[in-house]
Amino acid sequence: MADAGKKTLFEKIIDKELPAQFVYEDELCVVIKDINPAAPVHLLVIPRKRIEMLSDSKPEDQALLGHLMLVAGKVARDAGYGDAFRLVVNNGAAASQSVFHIHLHVIAGRPLSWPPG
Image (cartoon, rainbow, N blue to C red; front, side, top):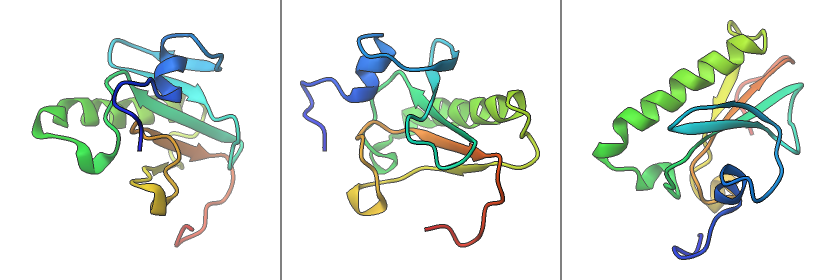
């Protein structure tokens, strides 16, 4: 888990203290290319507001979480994969969450099997 007083990797990227390939940003979130892509299209939708894990979200985060889903659909469409993409949210270290700042993975551009992982 992240230290509450220390910036996460994503907060440093959002604040432009670390480089990243931005593909979208608005007042609520940013979208960057994943540096270790699992598919030809692998984008991260990151809220500007720090929420460590999905299970930490509160009722007042409902609109923000919905916004992230809409942005995920937009960037998938913009990348040419609006009809076939996967969204992944890892919640906790045992689920492979490595940065404790909620984010959605938008994965597309190759056949995706089921079940994942």
